[in-house]
Image (cartoon, rainbow, N blue to C red; front, side, top):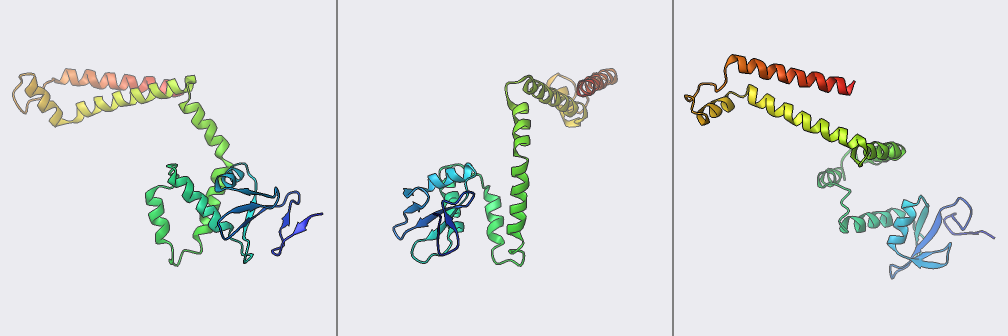
Length: 201
């Protein structure tokens, strides 16, 4: 027979949230398994998609929010650091703000959208950063882009040409290369751009 607590939640009912009771000594009691559990255990339940609610054993108040917040605090203290400092600062600023009531819904929708697309995100990250051929192409593209950037800086930086001229023995302030050399560099740069466009097509 399914047992129902004072808050209307069922213990052990199929498809229902598992009821956890928190006692004054901070111990957490899983009513479904009749055993004490830890915050790490509850964290694993969340990661496995298992739903639970936590009640104060004495008052019967729903303290699920504070327990979940405590789990996040414990994970962050272990060095996980999912929450950037700037995000935390911005979050604190919203306490007492006129937009405070809208923020929870916004964050919930954002996380839901991210969770729905997480498999697609994982696949894209796997393709981009694994040892598969896709990573080699990505790495080569980065290398070529850096080469193009460095060439562009050298070609279009007057100060760079002045220093190059000084180091090669040319008079200060006079470009080291001539017009023909500049034209050949532009042509080489254009050729590499065309090659990149063909590879990306």
